[in-house]
Image (cartoon, rainbow, N blue to C red; front, side, top):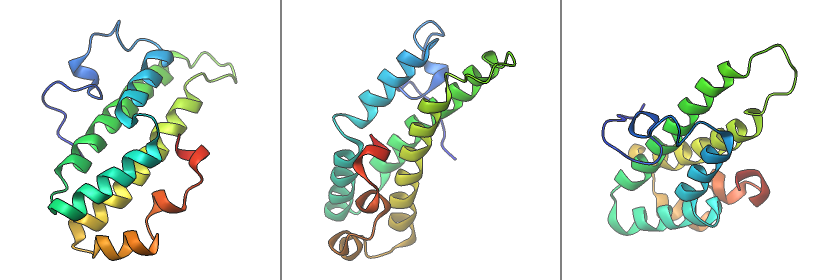
Length: 135
């Protein structure tokens, strides 16, 4: 979905393998993208879109998250040794949750939906997701 050209934290091709060779580093990168709280990030992105009608920041952040998702998928194959303990599962699920919530916001913004009205009604996915599920 995203063009991953250019360096940014979520683009696995812009980082050295050593920087993202562990789940711990991917987790740190996700936290750098989302900040203190994913919920707060989504709220800020939504309000910024309502003010500017420009969804490029939502798009850019989604691209970073999708870059991390790609990296986790690559790590997943490294851990496929037949054991049932998959260390990539938790971070992959968190990344997918964040991506899904970003996609929801972006889809409505690109579709021309009245985002301000949806925001006021609390109709966005991020507004209806328990905080602990989206970290």
